Amino acid sequence: MRVTGQGHTAVVEIGGHDISRDLAAYSLAHRAGDVPQMVIELSPRSTAAGVFEGLAHLVIGDPPDPGPAAAAFLSAISPAELEKAALDRHDFMDGRPHELTRAMLAVLREWALGQWGEPEPEGGE
Image 1 (cartoon, rainbow, N blue to C red):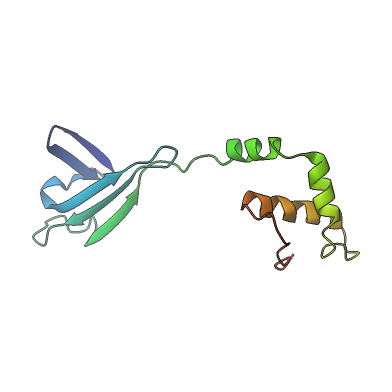
Image 2 (cartoon, helix red, strand yellow):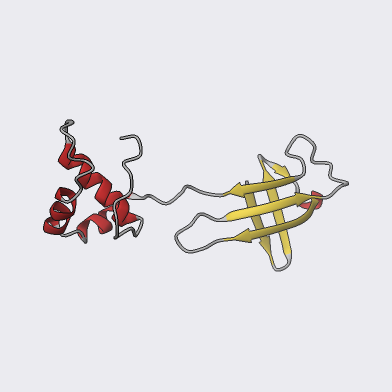
């Protein structure tokens, strides 16, 4: 998909097909850190058969890499606080392999979701 234009004129292409004259409406939104999104609606008299029909929701670009955000989150974690929180998770101290690691991962998941209170159920782990 490609959108180009100047002023009030836009050229919208999908797969090399210019569908500009077939549009009834379109909106383009982009928030910092997110990929641009475009919603396009074809006119009832559209001749762009085979390109798509009706209403389409297109996401343009690649989703952001979660690595830098994860690295920043993990850098802010106190090892002592993580260890204490994990050792306090008696729901994971069941004698199964890797119980401390499973408890630490559960704590990190909860902290990443902003859950600072009571532990959540293990959920199939």
